[in-house]
Image (cartoon, rainbow, N blue to C red; front, top):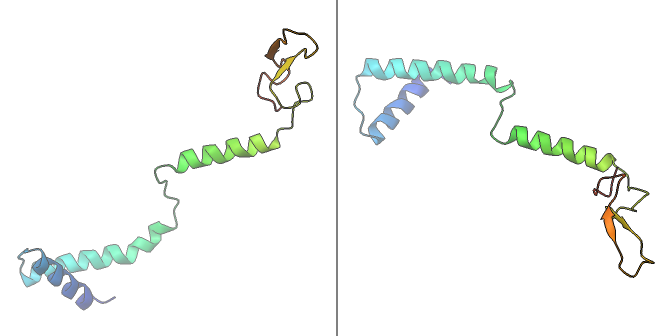
Length: 103
């Protein structure tokens, strides 16, 4: 984009917001904006960490690890073991999977 474009754009923006500037000041601002606009592409290829990206990465890793787990053979995925023949039916946390139901 040409400096004329940026000068006109800056002039319209200044006018819209009630900002007064000389033609020289607008030309300098337009030059700076043109420079920033032309170099913006250089930085867009860098990985920018957005809020939440770290959490998403962490959750994806946890999900991948969880998907790799298999059902505990001792408790058959229930997370607890007990004696169903006993009338009092005691149950305790599975000693193999520690109550998770998956290993």
